[in-house]
Amino acid sequence: MLRTQFWKQFFEEAGDISRFTGRLFSQWFKPRYEITEFLRQCFIIGYKSLPLVMLTAFIMGLVLTMQIRPFLVDYGVESQLPAMVGIAIVREIGPVITALIFAGKIGSSIGAELGSMKVTEQIDAMEVSGTNPFKYLVVTRVLAATFTLPLLVLLGDAVALYGTYLGVNMSGVTSFDLFWTKVFRNLSFGDVLPAFVKSFFFGFAVGIVGCFKGYNSQKGTEGVGRSANSAVVLSSILIFIIDLIAVQVTDVLGLN
Amino acid sequence: MGITKNKEESARTLKQGEQVLMVRNLYKSFGNHKVLIDFSFSLHSGENVVVLGKSGSGKSVLIKCIIGLLKPDSGSIEVLGESIPELSDDELDQIRMKIGFLFQSNALYDSLTVRQNLEFPLRRHSIRLTQAEVDQLVKDALEDVGLAYTINMTPAELSGGMRKRVALARTLILKPSIILYDEPTTGLDPITSKEIIELIKDVQQKYQAASLIISHDMNCVRMVADRVIMLIEGRNYAEGKYDELIKTNDPLIKAFFE
Image (tube, rainbow over the protein chains, first blue to last red):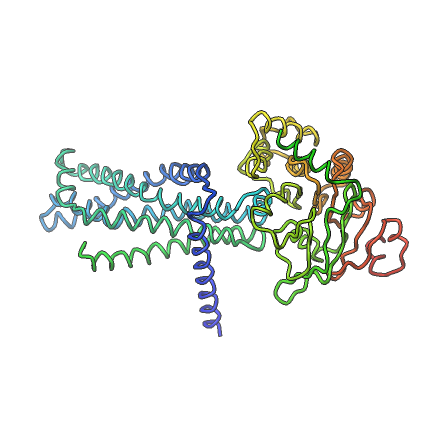
């Protein structure tokens, strides 16, 4: 009985999100274009996430290097440390960790903001004021999340690699030039491109889930908290599912 | 100035006592729950009509159907001669410029200042105004509600009564022919409630607009209403002047006035 109820809710929600996404695409290219609001959201979503993304990326690069080094020392291939950590960061850890941080910060913020606008009738007020609230609130936020996350991933990767450089130099001496040479010699276009492309999908998932949860928020202030929370949970799960699919696709395309 | 022209045009076309809103045989339900059942009434220029009913009786649903935020299941809603359920988005936008809506929760945008909140409908509706005209309209609207000094504050810095006044200023900024008030005194202390009621009366005198007020505050009903409509069990149960309704022996109506 409980299992039936779970699957019923699951398919209902999947259907609702699909309809919501369909509505997004149907409004995406139609005028009026909310350019100013889109740019404002890029600033809020992208620029204001930058410090958190940079900090976590730096620590991630440093810690990863310190954790891997002992194993490489045991096998006598310590010199491969920059290349190994570099590939791990660029191909997988950088995009996924940045996307998860992004889901935690931006997914919850969008869910809570739209949820609170919904329960305090601000979305209705917007519609009465001659504004298509779906276009103004949802389309701009989803687009901003989709296009800013890949940039954050690129910057995050760079900072994580700098953390790696410091980590490498904590127990040895490797010049700045030699470190980057070792990293880039082992990186190919096939490593960077799939990671960059999948981060667009991560950004889209975070944006659409946050907006869906917030826009359909119910039951007053309690519902706002629930929207924010479920936006983070669902978008984090989606990030891993997209990652899984991306690995299969790149494998099929021979980019692995 | 664009707005002034609109106001002048509407003043030319709307005569005192002319019908501005007509609702006929309106039905609205959510799932199996019937909220409005065969509801009919009309509103005329220059008059204040209060729709009185219990919480959850469908008052807000009625007002949201009128402004086009909800679609009725059946029945007709005509605002200034236009059938609301049949209008396209652009046509609805045009007619909404002539309707002011004061939301129960004020619905001020938290992330914007008072000035930006008031500018929002001016900039979003299809009206061409210069910055000087926008500034003047914002200033006038805030002066009308006595809160010109709050122009650069955010809603979070205002008290409940002040937020209601700012929301009313935003409602008035397009100088509407019809003003819809959704429970304007709910959640306010008696003194602030009285101030808001006085403000509604002042607005009525200044703009000569038709007002539809949704309320269950009997003070508001007594002080403002030219006509009262009793919304009971989704129907227009009774209609008349406050003094007439207060004398009735019908137990459902008496329950409100006792």
